[in-house]
Amino acid sequence: AQQAAGIYPALAKLAGGIGDPAVRSRGTIGGSLANNDPSACYPAAVLASGATIVTNRRSIAADDYFQGMFSTALDEGEIIIEVRFPIPQAAAYVKFEQPASRFALTAVFVARYAGGVRVAITGASNDGVFRWAEAEAALTASFAPSVLEGLSLSGDNMISDLHGTGAYRAHMCKVLTKRAVLAAA
Figure 1: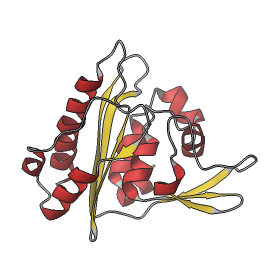
Figure 2: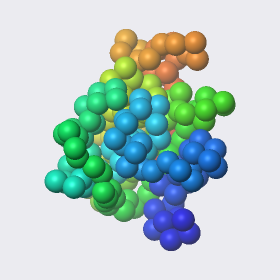
Figure 3: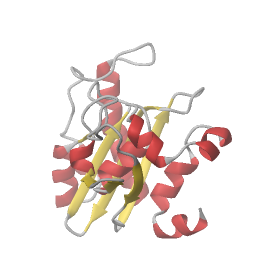
Figure 4: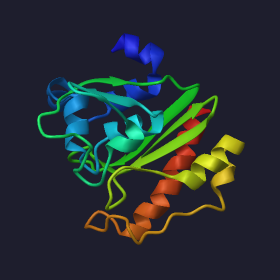
C-alpha cells in the first residue's frame, strides 16, 4: 500500500476509501472490474487512467472494456489477472458517497497526462462508468476548475433513485469534477 501511495497516490487514496476494512481486505480490483457495478470506485480510476485490463487470454484497453451497467468485454471463462496503469502527472478522485455502503452516488476521477486530461465518472449514469469528453477537452486546454463553468451534462440518462434525481447527479458530476481538478492541481 505504501509503495502504491508513492507511485500513484490518487489510486491508493481511492482504494483506501472503498467500503469498510472487511470489504477492502477481501475484495479485489479484478473482482470489482469484472462486476462493473455502476457505483463502484475502481472503474472510474481504470477508465480515467487509460489502464489496460489483462486477462488470462488477452489485454483490453479500458476504453473498450466497459460496455454498460454490469457489462464488460470479458468473454466466458476469462479471468482478470492484472491491471496496468500509466502513471499520470497529476490525478485525484472525489466521491460523494452513500453513507451506509460507501458506494459512490456520484464520483469523479481526473487524470492529467502529457497528452491530455481524462475524466471518468461513476455512480451517475444508467450506462455505468463513462468519460466526460467536453470536460476533458476544456481541462486539456487549461487545467483549472474555472474552465468547467460553461459545461453541463444532461440528467436524462442519469440514475434517478431515492438518493437523487438524474438532474442532481448531472449537477454533482460538474461539482465533483471541479473538486477533483483542485485536488489534483
